[in-house]
Image 1: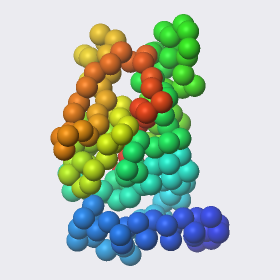
Image 2 (image 1 turned 90 degrees about the vertical axis):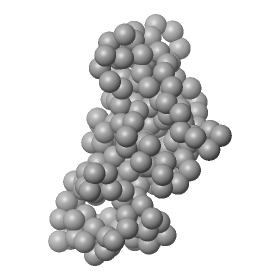
Image 3 (image 1 turned 135 degrees about the vertical axis):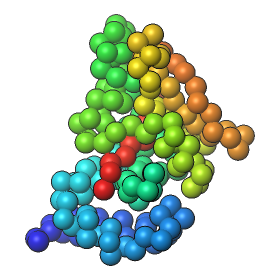
Length: 179
């Protein structure tokens, strides 16, 4: 399989990150991961987009399944100042953000982390100590106009609510894609 120089260089970045953070994926051999990435060029391209937007993706296991997850210490820099979804963006009349977390994730080919995934990620390190991240919001909350986000403060993980149309410079989203 012919890989571009960019893909080859990116695989080296992923391999280094994988080796430096073995607690995120114990008992998994890099050669298995590399083989899956090389046979899924569309997923590798999506993971590269996660990297380009500041996500620092790494392999994490959720329910014994492999996912590439945004593992940047703070919410990815290229995915901040977004409201929750397209409905919230359309409802906002003044001072609209440039987009929404759900739309951006969909365009990238990733999913927002749900609360369980977010809490699992927080057991593997300390994330969002200065920022916050939108998470997948249950439909009953979303229908009432709300959306959920998380962060880590005071050595604890917090889940909060906000209006779905709100947006802040320090709030982005973390995403994942199953490998």
